[in-house]
Length: 274
Image (cartoon, rainbow, N blue to C red; front, top):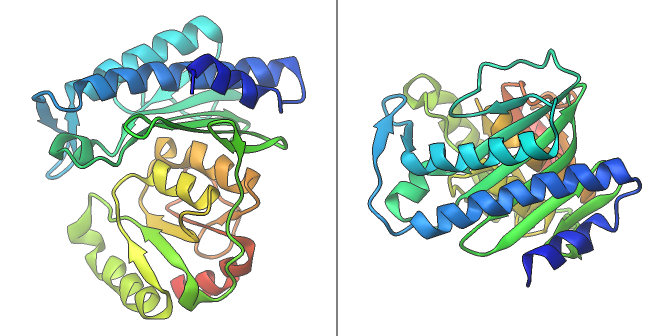
């Protein structure tokens, strides 16, 4: 599908010119960064470590530079919180772009083809525009508050699964695994016997997009960062799903945990994760 057509078909669902311009900016930046990531996928990578198992490649930094430049050009005056270079920004601004230039860097570095670009615009702490782009599959997920969610130019919705034993659930493991291992294993031991199966693919933004488009029935994880979840949070809610903390409280991108699912399963999953 031609890139410009895909964006135009999606933004026709937006209700006002400002929404259309913001969604177009997010999608343009996500697609441009995704093209670079795809071109570099099979090349050797320069890997540096941010922690014992938390790595970054030169492609993360280059993709972030593209996104930052394009968002600055299209939406001057809106600050950017980006994982690799400007993560020190806070939510003091009324509006804030939140960017993960390459969610699933470990997958990318190992040649495991599950990763994405994630871009969201927060307005007073809530996402109003979101784009998640999986470059190897050429799949662009996008959403606008109160206007719906799409995969490329097709509207998407969460599943209607109502029985846990029929549910496919996604999860992830935090980088601080030594400190969180008992909690992670406890959650797995509780959830896994009650559902059809669990998937751990290593890119939270894409996991959330998969909940939004019915490839997963739910997703949970702890210790994520705002750029991991901001766009996916909006995708799930605009696709008819529910997002909260494990206590059932309203979600925030700075919350220590996230549960996203269809509405029929949400309370059942909360009971397990509590």
